[in-house]
Length: 263
Image (cartoon, rainbow, N blue to C red; front, side, top):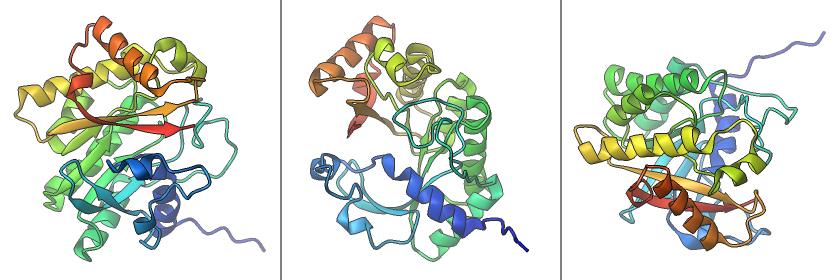
């Protein structure tokens, strides 16, 4: 008789911590631009427990983070992404309380000091980011955690969810992925570059500039080559131009770092 065993929180952490390795936190260029034959994970992280990442912060200090996806279910069609709905494989997902409890267990064991939380878009962007915000809310209000939290903002969500995230998290990021709407269409037919990505970047920037929130900065990342770009610097220059002409002046200057991934 075949018995199916549901994955527990550690099974999920092993899988969803592994899937989150495409999100770059370090500012070390040597690790960012490693040769394709090298492991994408920095050497100092290869012996750490699943889901734990030793990150270099913008001030140069290191911090052990639990880096994990809430779920790898995703309705989007990004052709470079292993979480695309086109990829036929088993998917995993936490509940809000389950992920919060898993983090607190690692935190209390002094295995991690902060959280980097991302997700696939399961259902709607609003529904997904609402769950991410609830995880952080449980950590802050129920468990009293006051440490570092970096939350990935979903493309296409409403402004109020971005504001809620900014009030709870230390750092926010919106993956810009590419530099123009035309190039975005080569990556995904389902994403709106201006409304889905540039607008939330401008919202995050505005909240940080106005103050009175927890967030102190935002970062982004670009996947170079997935849309057949041939020049990284031309791509980033076009990106800045598209932001300025889109009425979101200052967004790029408000981004503390932009990680570049080779597709």
